[in-house]
Structure formats: structure tokens, C-alpha cells
Image (tube, rainbow over all chains, first blue to last red; front, side, top):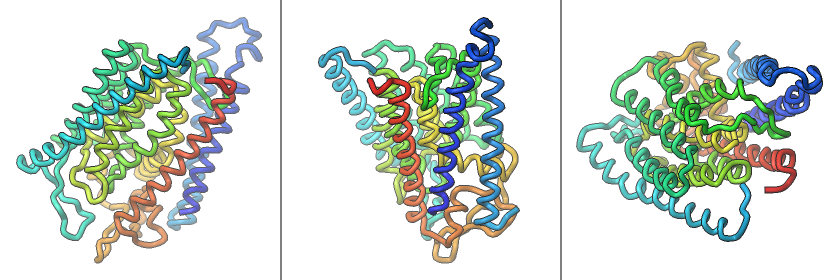
Length: 77
Length: 342
């Protein structure tokens, strides 16, 4: 049971880390990379693409975590 | 949410008490009559986790939708806010999809695909904000937000549907996860959606009385889908998307485990190898079959068999833990997004 609490805690921490990354690096991308000169929707497409890639990476990471946990607990590959 | 004076705060309190009372009392007093009606009509299923295999009426969805509709109509006529209309329509569509599944055996893809329709009222009525609250700040995502809404309602609806495997789990889980949602909507959302979130809480509270162990009625797909879809619609219209995801983490994790082990969208009844089995003394134990899907229940049972009631309590402990994480996230978001001001 305590390992499940730990797992949920790790997922929460990962969500916070991704949120911080999106706010700090992706949200101001129009100013940082495009110098505030691009169309709002082009910026949005770039941001959306990066966000989707990050979410896919998150799913991959969660899958990895799950595999580790399952191997340890249920001894299933 | 900003209250300019004490009068507006009193008005919200009065509206809140009124909406909550309607939702709670409707479900509380009509449910016993619904139970008797369903038993009389033979709309019952066996509760396989008990030695006497009692016959339990289902679905409770129609009574829940009556309570929700009444209270949301009252809130709408008090506020004339389109977000309330969007929450109501999303919930009604989710109920209808669930009710079809209650009455007729539908394929596994039906609920997730059909629930895309339930997300449409939020989009068509423009009941969303393109600024997504991301704990440490906001992100302006006009393009990404539309597919996010289309994904969120089916995912949350099916997540609550998937966790409804033991007496009282779906309603109890929603009840616990509602607490951070209500607080978040109060701080980051609007007064109208806050009233709707109170309505969801009190309807679920009234229903929990009949659904808790040992259940007197089951929600059915119509009940779980409408509760999940309403929760999702409130999270979107109340600018509390990430807080809602954090509060629902154990339930989302359960769906993720199931989908990644089965590797396709499928109904639980179509699975031949069960994730849990019953011992001779009617305790639940984790399956040793390697082909059986991995679920939260199976993981909770790896240390040994548990009675249904013990297992329900463990799931609630996880729900309380994730709700505490959601409350911590609200505090962080409060300082980063609002600078410590409501």
C-alpha cells in the first residue's frame, strides 16, 4: 500500500515538473524564440506540438514506472 | 472569484444552500422509491462479491439525472450563465449514452467514442477559457484546448466508470475528489460553476448513502458516466483541469493500467481472465494468471486477500491521498497564478 502512495506521489511530482517546464519554457516561446513577431496561431501550433510531445513522453515515462512496479509486485514482465 | 461586497457573498451563500438542498433532497427522498420500482420491474443484478449473492437494483442514473437537472435549472435561472447550460447538457448526453449501455450490451468502443458528443456543448456554447491553469502559471492555448476538451470528457467519464467495481467506490471516490475541485473552482473559477460543483457534491453525498457497502442500488453506466462527465465539465468550465486530474490520479492510474495491459478499448465483461478472484470465505484475491489485466484492485491485493469492505477503504485512502496532493497544488497555484489574492 505504501508503495502505491509513493507511486501516486511520483506521478504528481512529474505532473508538477512538466507544468513548471510548460509555464517557464513553452508559454513564453513567442517572446523567447520568435521575438514576439509571429502570428498568434503559428505560435499556438508550435506550443501545442511541443506540449503533445511532452505528454507522449510523460505517458512513456508512466509506462516505464508501471512496468518497474508490476515487475516488483506481481513478477510479470 | 471576487466578491465586491458582503451582499454578493451572502447571495452566493443563499444560492449555494438552495442549489445544494434541491440536489441532495431530490436524490435522498426519491432513491428509495426508485429502488422499489426497479426491484418490481426486475431490473436487478447479482452482487457477486457477497456470500448470499444478493440481487441489487440498477441503474440509479435516472434519479441522479433528475436531481442534477432540477438543481442546474434553478442555478441557470438564478444566474443565466451559459456555463451551467453546458455542464447540464454534457451531463444529460453522458447519462443517455450510459443508459443505452445499461439497457443494451454495446461494444467496448461505444462509450469512449459516444462521449465525444457529450463534450460538444462545452465547445459550442464557448463555456471554456483558452488560458490553462498549470499550477505555476497560465498557458494560452487556443488551438490545443479544443482537442483537450474532446479528450477530457470521455477520459474522465470512463475513468469513473472503470473504478465502479465495488460497493460505493465510484460515488465515494467522486465525493472525496469533489472537495479539492470545489475549492479550486471557488478560487480560480466562477461563482456559477462553484454552485454547480456544490450540486454535484450533494447529489453524490445523497447517492452514497444508498451505494455504500452494502449497496442498496448500483449506479449503472448511466450513473457513473454522468458523474464522471459532470466532474469533467465542472473542471473545464471552472478552470480547474489539472487540479481535477491530480484529485482523480488513482482512478486515472487504474484506467491506464487496464488499457496498457489489455492494449485495446474493451468492456470488462469481454475479459475472460479476471484480474481478481473470490476465495472460499468470499474475500477478494489477486489473480495469478499472467494474462489477466492489471488493475488497481489487483495491485492492492498483492499482499494478500481482503474483504470487499477492506478493499473499498484502501481505495478511499488513495483517493484522500490524491485529494491532499490536489489541495497542495491549489495552494501552489494560488500563489503563482493569483499572487495570493482571491
